[in-house]
Image (tube, rainbow, N blue to C red; front, side, top):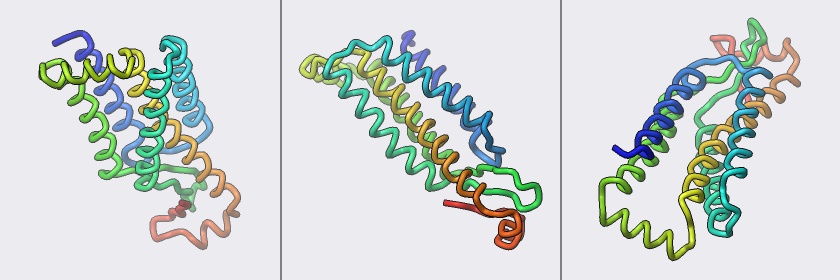
Length: 188
């Protein structure tokens, strides 16, 4: 197994662990969680910008990564709830199997792509030829994957913030009146 494949598996495993521990299920949401997520996203955006050669193909690959991450982020937020508990007035997020399934599909597709590059000579040759024709280097491919993942995280975090702020404008008495049987009021 090459170093690139080992790194890809390590990153995929780390992302899966983060998703399982911080996003799947019920989790409290607030300024600290928002700040840590956005700082992480900002750092990796800057790091990718700093180490990627500024060529048209690399910028295009990065932009396509951002576009793909936005689409996936929209799908993720369609299956995640943000709500305020009527009893303690705290904001929570809740994501289930559909959310986890989307993340798993993305991580497995990334791993399968890298596995095919490493183990399927015909695919690696065709992809390498395509990269040469497009004048795309490995930095552009890395930028695509990093920016896609960070856009997914950033989009999720910003939408959670928007939904949270909408809930904050709802008076506590209204929250108690609109709560379901478990004391949850959901926005968006």
